[in-house]
Image (cartoon, rainbow, N blue to C red; front, top):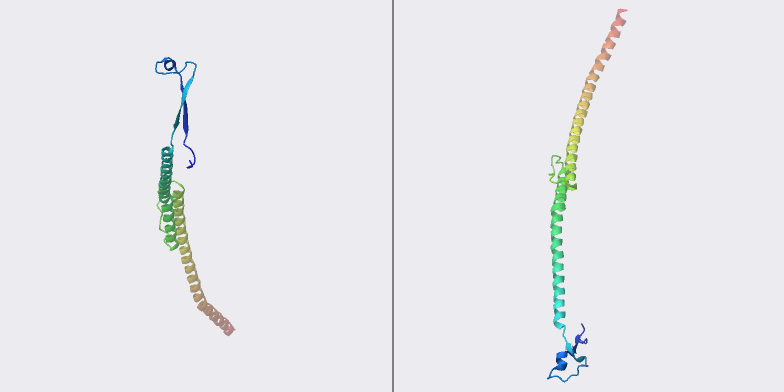
Length: 176
């Protein structure tokens, strides 16, 4: 309320009852229905203060409740999403450095648990593929070694074959 507003008034009529009209102390005629009016003016300043205090209390409780719920949600998000994601990020860094034996613990059946299981399966397949590449490289090296040996053996044999062919032709020519 504004300071210029007047406090509320209560007007209550005072009726003329038969005991009043017939009593010795009253000089009112029985036909008169209302003897007077009781005018009461009440100040609502105390009520306004109580309402304002209640509003402040409600606002503070709402802010405190929102803050508490926000902290609870943040801690739950950190625990249920943040930690598993950081674990997966750490695992990807280890795999990137070549540690294909690293495994992520699969602790939950939800999407993050499925992602961890898929990550473990991927690193297993990568390790198998790396082993296959090593085997292929070894076989390729053995093949190159065999080709080199065959080449080194072929050169002297070619010389021996050529020389023996020359000697055979010479021997045939001398017989005739």
